Structure formats: C-alpha cells, structure tokens
Length: 324
Image (tube, rainbow, N blue to C red; front, top):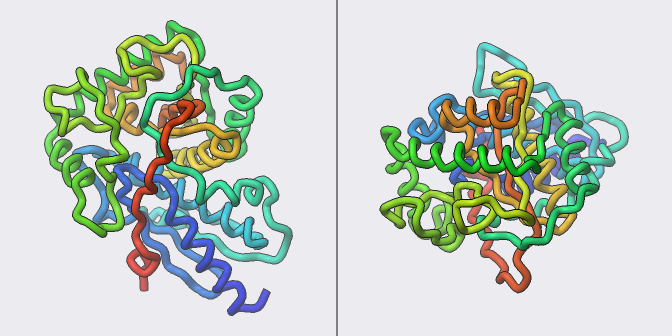
C-alpha cells in the first residue's frame, strides 16, 4: 500500500473512531497520526477525578476508541498490528496501530456499518427478552479480546445488582467534585462538540432529591426500583487483571459488544457508575461470584416500539484531538 494511500486510510478511520462512546462523552483521547501508523494517547486534561479517581473510565473510553479504529481500518480494507501499552514509562501512551500487508480482520470488518448507527439509549426498553443466541454472540465478542462477559439472568443476582447500582449512585453523589463534573458535562455550551445533551438524559423521578443533578438511569431494567421480570439485560464485563492493559481490553470489548448489539437491533447503555465506586465493584464481584474484576456494566435490550429516534451526541473534530 502506497504511503499516501495508507495515510488517507488511517485518517478516514480516525474520523470514525471519534464516534466511540466515552464517560460523559468527554472523548478523552489524543492521536498522533503518521504515514503508516497512529498512536493512541489518553488525554489527562479530560480526566474526571471526582467521577473517575483511578482513571478506569479514562482508559476504558480510550479502549473503545481503539476498537472503533480497528473496525474502521478493517472496513476500509486495511490490515494492522497493534502494540498495546507499549511503554510503561509513558502511561498515557496506550497503543500504536500500524498498517501491514495482509487481509483485513473479517470479524472487525463485519461491524464497520454499525459505527455510525450506534448510540447510547438511556430510556426504558421493551419487555421483549433478548434471545439467548444474541446474548451468546455478545459474550463471544468480548471473549475474543480477552474479556469475560457475564449476563445477569438470575433474579437473585439481578436484585443484588440493582441494590449495588442504587447504592453506588447514592455514595458517588457525595464524592468531592463529582456533582461539579456532572453539571459541567451535561450543561455544555452550544457547539462544544462534547458532553451529554440534556435531551439524551431521560427524566426519572424518585432517585435523587435534585432532579437537575440526576446523572443517568442507575441500570434498573424498568422505571421502578424492582428489576423487571423480562426484557432488558445487564451484561457485566470483567478482566483477570485490574491494570491498564485490562482496562484497555475492557474498552475494546465494550466497543465490540455495543457494535454487535447494534447490528442485532438492540439498544445499549454503558453504565460506568457501577464500577467507579470501590464498594460497588466489591458488591458486583460478590453478587455474581466473580473471580475477575468488573470493569463495566452494559444495559441492553430491544427499543420500546414507537420510541422516537435520539439525536446524536456531538463529537469534536479530528483536528482537535491530533497531537503534533
């Protein structure tokens, strides 16, 4: 592949990678683009210390962007090799992706058309259950990048998870700086290119005293406090190690699961709040008897029939995230 063709392919792929989901839609990534390779760096300026004190969300968000990039490159016909966490002396340098000769990854290319269709849907879902075959496909997608995906199907575990998520929301509310970050990223100025538009956060009463400070739905499968008997599903992503490499892999698995779910006609909603509080992580491990470390919870299900389409959340231009 000629150098100018390779550079053009990577630039087009990067523009699609910018559509990856991220905590509060902060888009906390920077990219260094070269003729035949691109580096992914976490952006410490966009780290949310009140929400994400151990930088878990930061790295998971970047992992989702990395997987979006790999899907886009494969969709454009390119083959790559990836060096993840290449230099411990530079912890914000998370990956280097190089174009190589060869055939594109077919599994990644199959998800190419879903990048522009995926969005986060925080509304209630249809009671229609997710077929077991589709759940298995999501589990397999996560496993392909070395991440365990655990569907929560038993009512006792679901009840325990609901309690964990509710308590996490209550506890996090009192973390220093958390509410300020919440307001900052859900009250962005016009044309900011980032943050969560108010229209994307459905109003749900009875969870917080101040509705205007309410974050996002706590992960319940129905508007009430009891888990729904059918319908939406909670999928927990977990890794063997709770380090940068594990969190990066969790982000890649998040992207893979979300894009696969989108292709199956499912709505999705990543719930990072469930793992931002240490007690909630311990609670998830206990509720699910997990030896691995929970990294993210994804709520998914069929959209409610007749639900209006959601407006896409904004994205920053490529020029704003390129490193010299």
